[in-house]
Image (cartoon, rainbow, N blue to C red; front, top):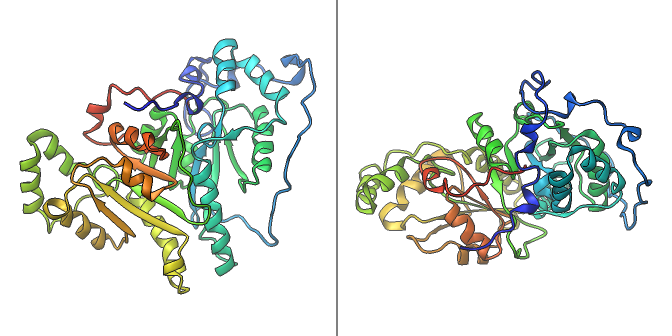
Length: 388
């Protein structure tokens, strides 16, 4: 089994729930919150040193007439600070010394930017697509809108802003919940995709109908394109429902093939990531309308263990009936996915089975687990609920 570095993205592993209980917060969720503690001002934190000055910060490039799209028009991607950046050192401070020392540490180091995390190349690719869209459609609000989501107290926001400026990211929307659940806010943002390191929160988002996945940091990361966003999806229990996978788990491969043959003209039901693929497709069509199909900065992939001749036709008919295009479809007939993903070099790959997530990570692909469907009974030995 491949060793994946989980600690950098699994910060505050469940300890937030151990903080003092308070009344339901403004987003309708109840749970542990820093609001129940007295206000953290600098005197209370007992800072012994002033924050170090920023070094090496690059000026942000903000083009003229840039506007912020309304949530109902944008493709909103909510990203946890723990997957966008590397925060393992801060995790140790929190676990070993508690909340107050953690906040003191963050303030004293607020001008030291975090290093990029597993979601960083994906976010950069979203911004590259936005740049192309603004060139073609200067007044359009159909853009990717990135929201940074964190359980952190607002004091930590300064360090996050400094880090975003340092890396020249264009992220203006923050959601700092001070320890309470962000799920209510995700619904208010009309979130199309939520990426986190907390599998419990991801499952909560999926239950609310929000496409979501748990991210992992591979020990090595394959270099990815800076000009073309590449997103790869598994089929069953990701784009599609787990109907067929249930047949396979319960009755075996032969019965699965028989079921797919008998039902090849009956559409599969939608899975949790179907809506995100649909959102990507809408943006792709804006490039096609300008004659840029062959130079589109978004490319999508279906990477499935299904066999093409025996069970692939139903998947393809379903996508066509939905009006969705997949740029490349790989039917692997049970072969390992890792080597194919190494060739594709996606910014992110979504799968419902930890076995495939681990195989992708072994080859350097940033993979995200979608904890949905019958396969989760077989994933239960993998505890990925820590952090956010």
